[in-house]
Image (cartoon, rainbow, N blue to C red; front, side, top):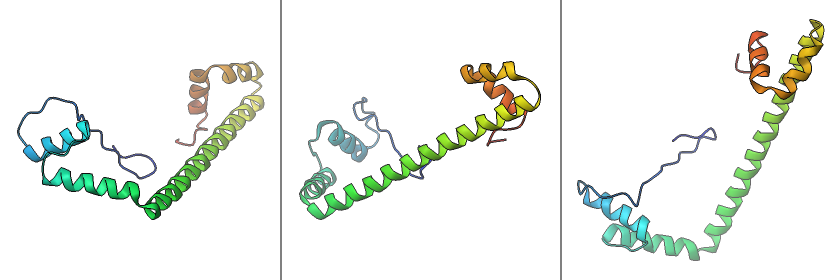
Length: 127
């Protein structure tokens, strides 16, 4: 799955029954599920995981990157809130200019109605 921030997430059903079609994949999934290595690859993987857990420089870099990612996420959330407020303000101004003041309270409580009016007046950011 590709996420909006450009990262990719892969979901693995590590506990699912094995079909036996791919021994290497089965070994990897078993390792993810049990944390017990069963072949050369999963043994090397476990060694790398242990090394990463003990590597202070890596931990600091990882935490730094996580902080940056969190800050970017928070900035994106704030931008989204501002865009939502701006969109609502444009809609309210449009309703006022048309003398439809009764609709103003309706759009503040009914999301579907608000979305319909935003679309009707072509006020959405995605329009």
